[in-house]
Length: 450
Image 1 (cartoon, rainbow, N blue to C red):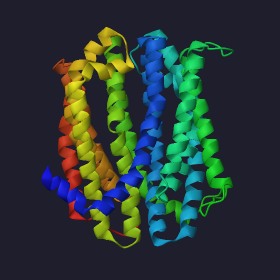
Image 2: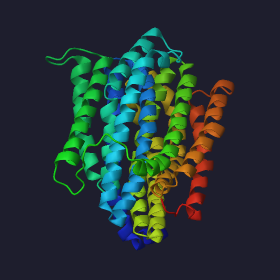
Image 3: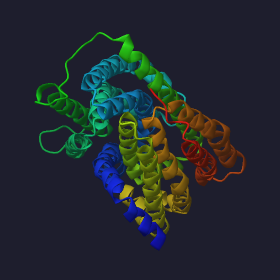
Image 4: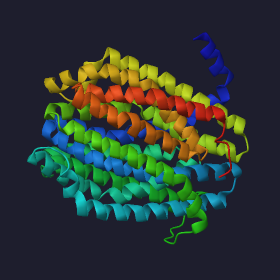
């Protein structure tokens, strides 16, 4: 412990820089996750486990779209941060504008596809008719907010890539507050507002996403700033090509990752409604637990890209290692809470005794999984910031499809472990593949021109 303290003190300047950029990103990620968590808690407490399951299945598809298409901004962060380090502000603006245009087209396309095939998508789940109908209703309302959400991704990438993680945090905070208030009045029908139930939660989330987008537009298009953008619909192949080449592996990675979660949802849907509700809550708990690691990953990607733009690869390496160490420290803290307070943590999300009882035994394995999970998230950010997205993509594909998905199926369907089998599989997969990414980072093969 004393040696760790001495090491951190010796790297004080870099450590402060990482924390200063990470903290707003951490808060933003936590608040962003709370948009979904607010729905989970309020639906569980105000309506019941059927509504919770419906929103869970719908959000699984929505999160698939979020993670896949937000990955198209990985290339933008890498290129913008490196341009910022090189002080090439013209290229920075060009990349930002093209990224917004790309997200505009993607958002429109996915909204239309989602609305056309929503009923078919939810037909794959083995659920009751009520859960099916509520899932479709919730999903179709959320789709109305898909375009502004995609645009928000591109706006946030521009700000983060140029070192501004504070503004996205503030905008996300405002959206989160609006979402929670909207949930309360629209689910229950407070005052002049109608009682909409599960549809009310969806409308509150959609409305909050539109407001967030309007705030981003004000900051980047109207507010006086050296990064003030202009709206253009035409794509520039000289910018889109490197943007696409860096971003596409990340999008493929996330597509296959989210597909694995959809299959996981199909496996879990074979269990009873209580197990499904417990699963959704445990996933929300785990998602919240690694948000600081995601924030560190975002900051690390920006700082590594900026350092490489400044031709300072030694600094980029130090940032990667220090950020990973911080992620590991956070993992130990969260694991301790999961082990000591399992019932209290689950009780935040549900007041149904049977749901809490089902989830408690699994919390120990959520705790064990924190170590590999947090390491993987942070070191992936360092590699993405350097543009080494293909290696991260291959790592994720192999982890999910060679170990995680097959093992989850075997544990649940052959060994009848119940929900805990999912975390058996996660722990095994993260041990192997977080080690692989650490070795890749150590090799320094990611230090290259993009």
